[in-house]
Image (cartoon, rainbow, N blue to C red):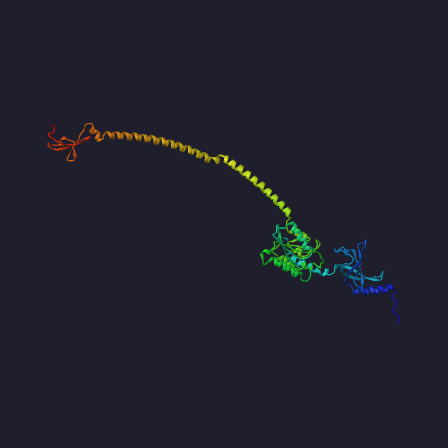
Length: 402
């Protein structure tokens, strides 16, 4: 039986129909080579591995959806369909989506976790804790070796050497990276020694591929940052990289060096600020003192303030006048009393018995009693005569009137 003879076009059409129906959608992993962008905006490249290669076309309307840079040597996963191009007699991949190796799965997981955490409020601005302006201790969560720790140490020592630096070395990529970062956050939030509790934490690592940064896109790390009672500054990768950890953290820094700058004040700027504040305080105190002195001077010169002094002076004058009047009254009264006393003494002196007797009078007494009348005596009565200079006994001789 003779074989059917097909034309080149017929054969190509048959192959096209069969091949395109067998592979309506495929995902191919390979390395980009011979990448060229046409003036029309379409991109033509070859996807290859060690043993084979396939031409790939990315139409302009598809290319504009890819933010990634296409370059030779980049390993990617291309989504699309197989197509046979009859004029060249070749098959090619019409690409509808493109991602770096492994990035497609990781991006899907990233988007899913991002949506979940956003719904739970992990990224809400109101839950972000403020970064202390002048921290006493800073906790560093990063690799103990490499440029990151050196760069941050240089920035911190230059800007604010007074802060104590506490390093918890962690693995920043690989299988144990997630557990390592969580352990560091837990240690600083619950230290056995209170002196090891920082005022702020810096979670940092250098740049890398999506796979290298994957530990910082894990939910467990996001939970640990969200639960931290200590403010967290995140600086993962380069400035163009963005991880879940960056978004959950209280503050995101573009690089580890920037994170160090955000964590502490500039010593020189702080000193200038302190000097400025001291100057303002000095001026305020001087103004307050001058104002207070003016108030005191005004009060001390006012009538209301001096009225008690004036009143006391008036009362003192009255007191002196009263004292003078009292002294005059008491002096006059004393002199009157003294004169009256002298007169009484003089009068009493005139009534003195001895002075009366000196004038020639005699006291006569009989049987111990003074005799005031001659009728009280009879002849022969014994009497006693008292003179001013002594006494004499006598006997009555005659009768009354003789």
